[in-house]
Structure formats: structure tokens, C-alpha cells
Image (cartoon, rainbow, N blue to C red; front, side, top):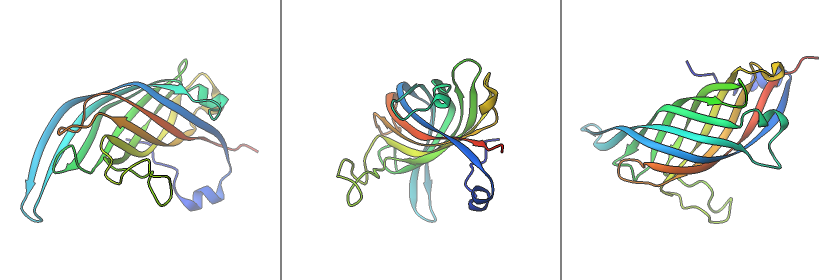
Length: 194
């Protein structure tokens, strides 16, 4: 089962935490299509495409924002089953989710879930300069939540990882395949011991 994301306001308010910034570049990534199936609904009338991809990506530190604790997560992130449902076909809006295993330095490992929206651009006017369109193709944006399940650094064992990711891939009618690159910005959240 995927890690429950630490997103309960009452818990965040009541407990004490120590945070370590996490800033990563996602490089040398591959997106491999393993299954694809179209579906037609009668009520309501719609057409969708469901895809399954295998995602692997090398994760490297992005200075100056990555922390000492964050450096322990340089390594390889893998999602064996990244499932996406698209409106009509792989060139339209969709949503995705997949469970990941992130192997960092030494014995450090994070397990959890990533989920978000596909083929949408959020970095647009009026909040930002117009570097994206609302229907930007070949973009995955979302949130990654995980827990450090093993490490040779006891101070971060059991800590949570929460991050936003932005991935750029080559789009296609089947949802994309091939090389990709991206960014990941977040925090490592550890319970505070007074």
C-alpha cells in the first residue's frame, strides 16, 4: 500500500517537524508503453484511452537548493506501472498515478505514490509569464509522497518525502514513449524530537 501523504492540517498544526529541502533534476529517464486500451462510454458519451507505462529515471541533486539529507536520495526512481486515463487519446488531457521505488545512495530507499495531471500547462498567465499553454502536450505534473523505508542514516529513517514534479516527454497518440526529463522540488519531513 502506498504511503499516506502528510496532508492533514490538524496533524501538521499539532506535531513538530524538521524539514530538509529536496531539489532534484530528473535526467536520463525512459517512458516505456506496456499496455494500452481504448474505451467508449454510452452514458455519458465519451471516449477514453487507458495506458500503462514503465518509468525509470536517474535522480540527481540540483544545487543550491538540495540539502545534505536530500543528497542521500540521488539515485534511481522507478514506477513499474504508471497508469494514465486520457480524454479521447494520448494527445488530450489525462490523469495518472503509480507506485514508485526510489533507490538513493547506499541503502537509502523511498517507497510511495506519485499522481497528477497529464497534458496540462499550469505555468501560464496570469500567475506566470506565458511559458506554457493550458493544453501543453507532453507534460506530467503532480505530487509525489513517500516514506524512507531503509537507510544507513538513522536520522532520516521513517521520514516522509513530499514533492512536486514536472516531467516533459515526447507526446503521442498512445500517451508518449521514449526519453524524458524533469524536475522535482520538495521536502524531507522528519518528526522533531525535543
